[in-house]
Length: 367
Ligand SMILES: *Cc1c(COP(=O)(O)O)cnc(C)c1O
Image (spheres, rainbow, N blue to C red):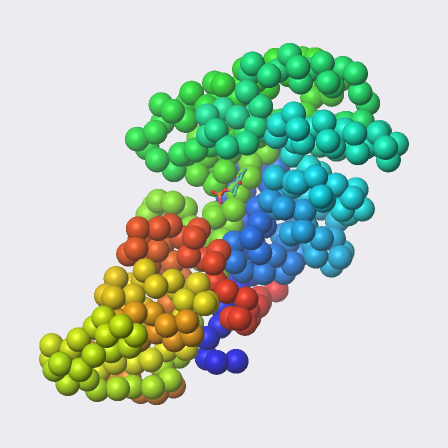
């Protein structure tokens, strides 16, 4: 313990879950994204809690992320968005549901299931409706239908797509074109299938901004963790993760004195500088340094000055009454991570999901 820790507030998670649930019809399922250690928090703790409060599905991106969840006894179905062939054994062993996103992975998984003599294995099919990342396009449908006609390896649990810009009001035209492309894809595929797979396209901003396309399920990540990609939604949501640090040393710089590596800060007047116990190895990358980022000491915003070090950073506390040992807020419910992220032109997702493993997680819950 170095005075730096990440609080994970499960009451806030429950609040966000209920808020998002209040925005969807009771028959619509909720899938919670717990990829990347549940956006940098603690995937096992988050997934267990969500299972208790009634989440319908979980999703990760790579198979290895799902294994600790199963080992901790989580039974909820887990969708794996971007599985790789090396992990097919573990998909079966841990009963995970792969997204098959191109013909290569589909054929490889089919061959694998045939060798294992497995029938009706639950899978998901991704439709590329315009993000151009993963998924099949309309022109590939005929070939896809043919494969499904000639095998009973698969049970298609869902057909889904992913929005590229559902948070951006300037992109509604494009988002609507994605919806149209996805509907065409879904309908053309589903009519050839023995079952009706679930249909889903919404991430958090899709859920909030496109209520007409919630379909059978919505997939939320950032909203559950407390960010709504919009100031209005941010007021209804509560950040699950709060990052705190500590002042470990204070120096007074005189005009002309330099600070830290490469002497990137030179004092022009008397400057009180505090050293805090977190650095770029913990996810507060160097871009936040040199006056761009800021943290809070006794409710006052303090600029990060000089170059951020691997394990420490320095802040200007000239205008704050403070002493060694005082707490520093990097982000919390009052000072959202999106504000700090915006200071270097990035997004809340990136800041919260890169908080390093050295920082202890403290779980807070009143339940
Ligand atoms: C990460 C992800 C989501 C969740 O997105 P949020 O914006 O965090 O709600 C949903 N679907 C897919 C395919 C994703 O990769």
